[in-house]
Each structure stands twice: as structure tokens, then as C-alpha cells.
Length: 286
Image (cartoon, rainbow, N blue to C red; front, top):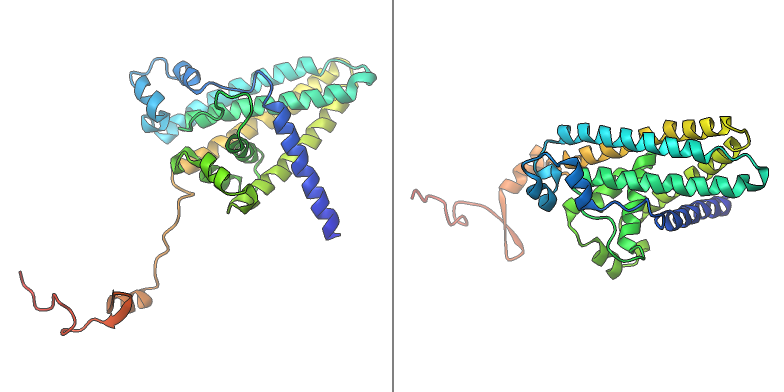
């Protein structure tokens, strides 16, 4: 039974990776960060600072979350409209492949929206100029989609791969196999949930194509119902990230234990009791 579950989990991970690999090749996927920010903040007197340091360096988290609402609404409306048109064909001979193509497009739009939300909250460019997607970009896409679908640990994965913790993700991945990184279990969880959603979307959109016209309505409805909350989940993750919810927490010491530490000092690796004789500052008054 355990072996079967492991196989199913691996299949979901493979499904997710294959979908991401195909979706990122769509022309609609890539969002050029500078162009997007110029459009969003064209009236801002702080545009140059925004481009260099990110909107989060200028505006409050609350203001950016409000801005994100508009971005999510626009993306959802556009994607649902396109999904309606894509859901119209009802030829049984093309149902399965067309349904699959719709899902690729759906995930392409999801990655597109995820980039826009990420850039609003201060992330740097997801893609470089190369045609091939880097391993670092793949991990960030997995994290973003995981956050959209509410995968357990995805929020922490986003914070771990965030610009706010440094831009050396690519070097860290290159220096160490992905499976050896501390956050690989979070990657696996996100991939499995993404894989489940690929399967669910494929079935839903394939069935929707079986009914002329109504199929378009159903397909658009499926898209709208899922797409909007996906965007809001991701925006909420970035809000929590900027608010420091995923920062390393410094644990408070037990007061009794802390009191014992106050009576000791470490010199050259040796713990000695602090007494009047051993304390070089004892009796010093200035």
C-alpha cells in the first residue's frame, strides 16, 4: 500500500513538472517586470525607486494588497473570457486533446498572474532572457503555484525562495542537489497538489466541451470559480511574508534558565562562575 501511495505521489509530481514545462513555453506566460511596474505605477512620483527597489519599499503592505485585488480581478476576467471561447468546440474527436490544451493555457495564465502579484510585492524577475527555464525559476514557479492552490508549506517555500532572503537561489540549487535542500519536502508537497489540480482541471474542461455553447459557460465558470481565490491566496502569502510571519523566530528562554546563564560567562570555551574575584569589572565605578 505504501509503495502504491509513493508511486501515485511520484506520478502527481511528474504530472505537475510536465505541465509547468509545457505551460512556461506559452507566449502569454512571461511578464516583464519593469514594463508591468511602469504600467501599474505610471502616476507615481517614486517610479524610479520602485523599479530599483520594488513597490514594497515605497508603499504599505495594505496599499499593495488593494492593488493586488485589481490585478487579480483583471486576470480572472480575461482568463475566464478566453476559457469561455476555448470551451465551445464540442467535437468528441477533439475533446481530450483540446481539454488538455485548455489546461496548459489555464496554468500558463496562472503563472502569468502569479508573476504580477509577486512583482507587486517586491520580487525580482522570475525569468531570465534565456529560452530555457532555469532550475531556480522552476522552484519559484512551484512555490507560487503551490501558494495559489493552498499547498501545505507553500507559503514557507515562497518565503525561502523570496528575494527578501537573497538572490542566490540559483547558486544554492546549483551547489546542492534539489533533493538535498532543506525545503525539498515543501517542493514535493506543492508538486503533488499542483498535479492533482492538473488532473481535476483536465477532467472538468474535457467534460465541459461535450455540450455546445453551454460547454463554454461551464468552462468559464470553472475558471472563474478557481482562478480568483488562487490569486487572493497568493497575495495573502506575500502580505504575510512582508509582515515577517515567516521570519526565524527567536525563542524566549525560560526565566529560571536565563537566570543561571546570567551567573556564568564563557572564556576560551570554558564556563566559569562569575564572582567578585573573577569579574574584571567588579567594583569599577568609572
